Length: 231
Image (cartoon, rainbow, N blue to C red; front, side, top):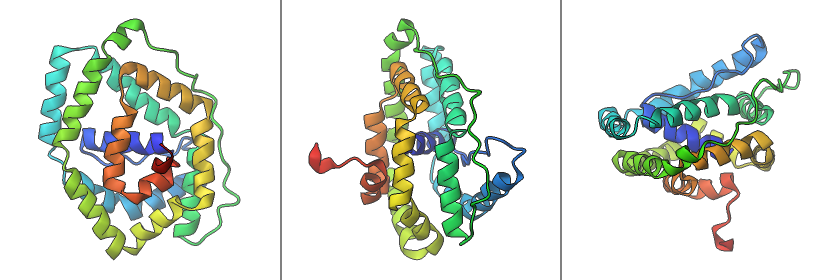
């Protein structure tokens, strides 16, 4: 789940727009309504973070790198496809249902979890892509440098202290029940495969984790399951 969280956090920063994943099966009306409820409650908070980002600076960084390496388009396409594919996993749906049940104090026991099988486990990228991985690393580092991480961190701390909805959300995502879902998500073969491909493209997850940890503070260790004292 941290992979999904980090990718979404990075994509929000990259696009300068709120990224709330749509339900994997739109015909599932109950699931559609649940996603809508959460979007309605948390989109305004997400947009507060997006508003801190200088989108023009991010776009300038990306355009400069694309000019020097057109092959980055392949990375961006896979990056977007990866998020879309991961959103269809049962573990993500279970996490959404758990959050919704607690936030709205309701039971979602009758909502069907849809285990989609349409997405193939991604194949390894070519050796050419691996050779270009340094370009992706440089791009990510430059994007991180223009992000207002201090302001984002301060805004999150303020919301946790002053907004009951945000505080409740973080209480839920650090609960034992949620963390069990996180472990199943991390062990899902599609997640393992996708992470490997993104690493082949040059996506530095250690760097993304450090960025996420800086903004999320102590919550990072709880959500990620990474115990820094053991390292």
